[in-house]
Length: 151
Image 1 (cartoon, rainbow, N blue to C red):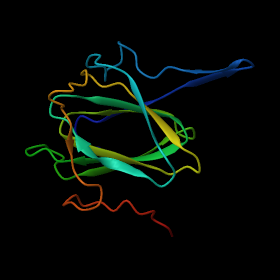
Image 2: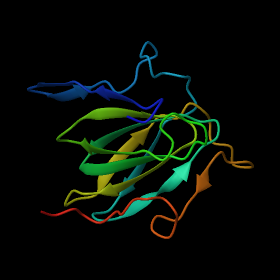
Image 3: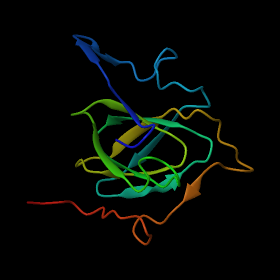
């Protein structure tokens, strides 16, 4: 596992009215502060990535559909520098993924329908000076291929 990455298995509590799932609590080990909450989606087969932050931690949970979330440790001097982690998250595997600053991340919708991600970053998005640095999803030096691995 990449240094600083944490995974929390989310518990779904169903009853005859519907279901409840806590995502992030202030008493969770991974809680580093509250910036905002937002939702983003991807259509089937779409890759959104790579990007990373210098200050911000992300806390991502896929709440509809399925995503392949991939992390790459681009931090010089990290004990896990250049390591890659893949996580399959969503309806069939409800997890919260904590991504520390400096770790490149992206996701690909692997379900047949649009997938939705809720992110709870530790910082508020700064429109004038965003703490968001992008790397092309396919044309880059990251040693990862987003293609499905059959076989």
